[in-house]
Image 1 (cartoon, helix red, strand yellow):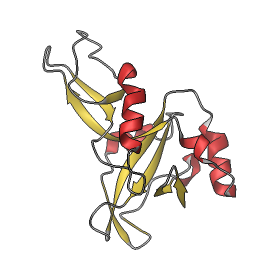
Image 2 (cartoon, helix red, strand yellow):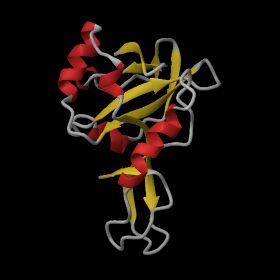
Image 3 (cartoon, rainbow, N blue to C red):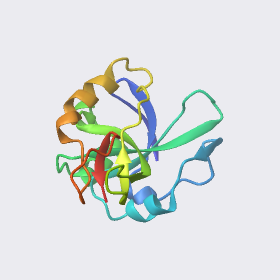
Image 4 (cartoon, one colour):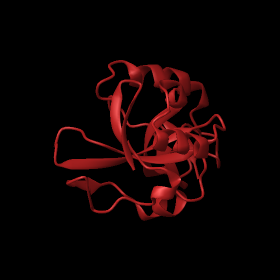
Length: 156
């Protein structure tokens, strides 16, 4: 784990080798780890766990950076560890949360990563920029093709 700043926002970045955060990390209570995602982190090459702080300075919230461009995140992990990453390494990543998403049309339920409508603290306008880039790639229900009515970027 390494605390970094990229694209104007600060977060703690977990490499694939770092594993899963403990309940208390860096003196902060960690919230948001779902057992489903704990199993996915070791097998999904396009996802990295991050910790962010929002309003309560004593709590760190788990989020997942998701890349859909086949970027080699093992190389990025090495860059982060060595402090040699740049904003360019993160420009195609979006901050996500895990959720079980139910299709309102057919009722099927999917494990998904969703872009939460929260700002990238320290970088005004970054959420809107990333959202505009991802809108054409938002996922629909694999069963019936309907809108999932969420900003779903990945369906497991």
